[in-house]
Image 1 (cartoon, rainbow, N blue to C red):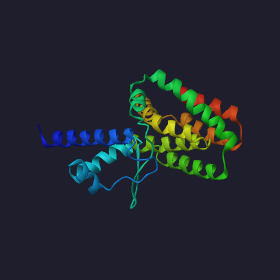
Image 2: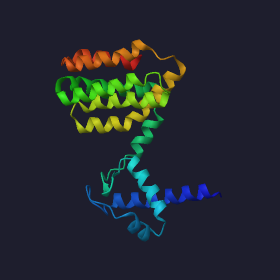
Image 3: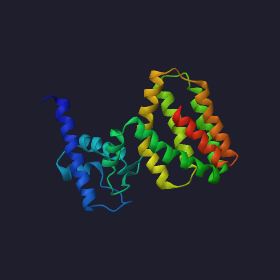
Length: 216
């Protein structure tokens, strides 16, 4: 077994040990977790392995890492199975989910958005426009930020969190479409029209435009 495989298996083992403790209630939600040296001593592994394991837990949404302040338990409900289910869904299932989740959230955003939301949405759309001809990864990252901010403007934390997990599926779909087809200015322009409908507080138009974008 190569060094990289050994390292990976040690990290996976550490992740499982930490997940078990979280599920068993060793720490309360919002509680600061022990430091990396403390966890390393407790689990009998290296600090580097603990650091890598904490990155995995942060990525899966269980743990929040605050720079200079340590790691905090974000939730005791492990979203791993939900993420795995999302990753296995077909393009058609992903499209259905976007219609239910994203279009409805954008309808709410049109009713609830604040001036601060509009400022952040304009900034995100400007970032997308600036990177429209950049490499695919950069553009998709900018586009997802715009979509996440649209959903966030609904001011429903549950919808925002669901979309945050689902955005990996959206990213894969965008990359698939944009690799197969040339980038289309008319499709990009729909983003501006959606923002306009949200600004004008027109939920039905916002939802209609969002559905057109999902189907494009």
